[in-house]
Length: 380
Image (cartoon, rainbow, N blue to C red; front, side, top):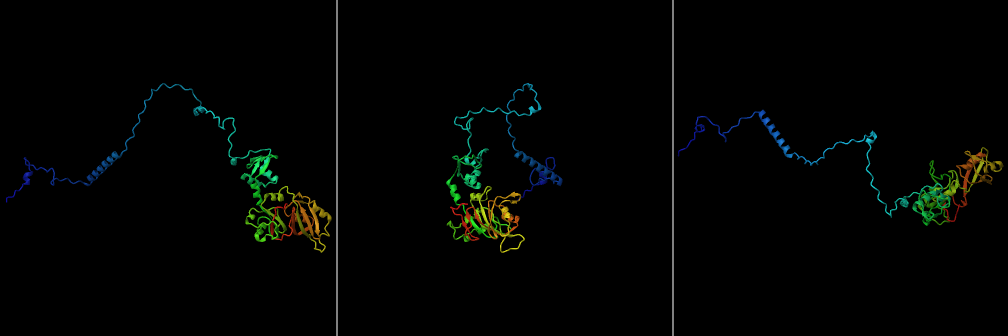
């Protein structure tokens, strides 16, 4: 079989005998780039790519509003010249005309203003009157603290109207108390304690316990005529109405009732307090006859009236001999360690002091360290 052979050299020649480079195919060769040419070409392509991306993702510019046609500028009129203060003054717009008031509108001109709720109202000061709580205390209706609590609770009326805190009243004002206040007041207790030596009347001091620590169920007197049993709530708010020195013994009153405290220790209190005081001469030996035999009568008169403490004249006192070594004092005031200091001024030393009566309430047979309730029929 005959084989046809192509003479490439001959086929590649043109009519003129010159070689011609093929247009496409494997015979097409590309000259090799240098490193600088390749880097330049790559940088050019990268720049073209970034520019194309920016053009594709660039936000469209906002549409411009059509501007209204401007009027033809007129000639500027001359304005009057202003001072510097007037140039910075802001002109206020004119106020709209006020709407006519309705007939049923209470806040219209000439009508009384609308009042706030009673619980938020505060009484206007009345220079001619005094505070309601103080007036109630003077009348013996309640203590000032109790009066304020009752007023806040709505239990007090003045001339038929509900009272408010801080209200002032005239001396002839009619004050009415709700029965709920009286029932609450009746729950308050007053306790009579026979205080022993070594207890303080009020708060604990110098390591000594207060006398109120003795108020408990185990120390209630078995012969308590009130018939009331001890309750822990009776200790709440219990305060001594008067003091009795740590080295003194006798009747001590503790109460929750502010009225009783005011009667016993108020500024104008006139309740008698009776003491039995055992004494001896200062700097003299003790004799069987006792100090009564050698004590001058004029010194006894000084104890009754004529002594001063801290520059203040003492009130009249009833002082007499109970026996050969014991004096009986009846005072209407209670200064700190008054009896002991009075005795020292006349040459006597107190070696024992016991309070046996406050007003019409006597210590009686109440044992030392025990207590009882004040009965409803007892009054100081």
